[in-house]
Figure 1 (tube, rainbow, N blue to C red):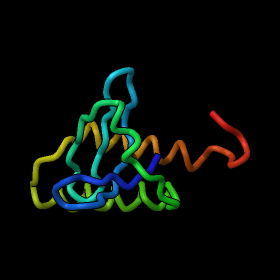
Figure 2: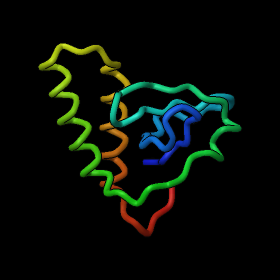
Figure 3: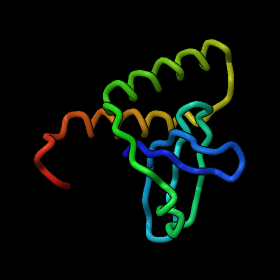
Figure 4: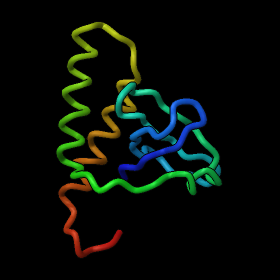
Length: 98
């Protein structure tokens, strides 16, 4: 759910997996709210991060409120998807697999 992604420009970035399709994956970078669309073969470049999803969702919501106050542009739908997926992951029991 929460990963580190190595980009050629800029090094490691903290990202949230928004969607994994047959050909493409969509990632939301937590710090800038940029949405990346990558081929599925790039999923090997993602490294899992051991962060609590609830806390990460709260941090994203705080950053969204700040960017709204500053009237900066970002994908509101992607941010809401990331928050809801992280909150859903926080509600899941640890011992069950989905």
